[in-house]
Length: 161
Image 1: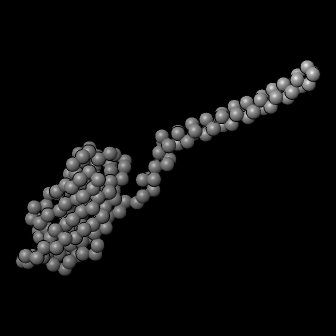
Image 2: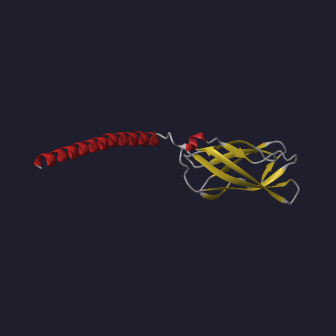
Image 3: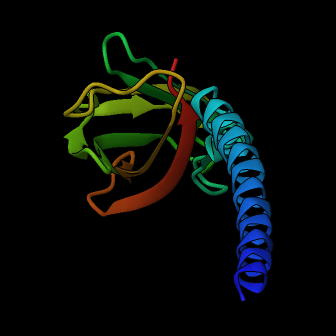
């Protein structure tokens, strides 16, 4: 009887040792994979913002020529072209983003037909460098000599420098 009991214990010990070796081997593999994934994530490999294009779209009447955002002074600039076929007076420009609404520096700006004009804004927060900054802008303007104001909305996604 004692001999049978010893055989059972030896068999159970071998099974336990095999299970423990299995767990330890796969534990090391899982830990190594976790460290590799953590390192890749730390260095920004999984950052999807790197693959998003910079976009500036205001439509055909006021097409966007260029845009830029700075982190050091938190300013946002974009240039638009007047393709309306008439001179315009820009009375107000607002930008809306995750940081809130900010007014821009365009108190009654006269823009002749076909010319390019620059708008500069300062959002309410410091922009993080090397990240994408997405905002929508509303340009309020009237044709020269008219009192009817129009709004042109545009969407901008730019990399903060």
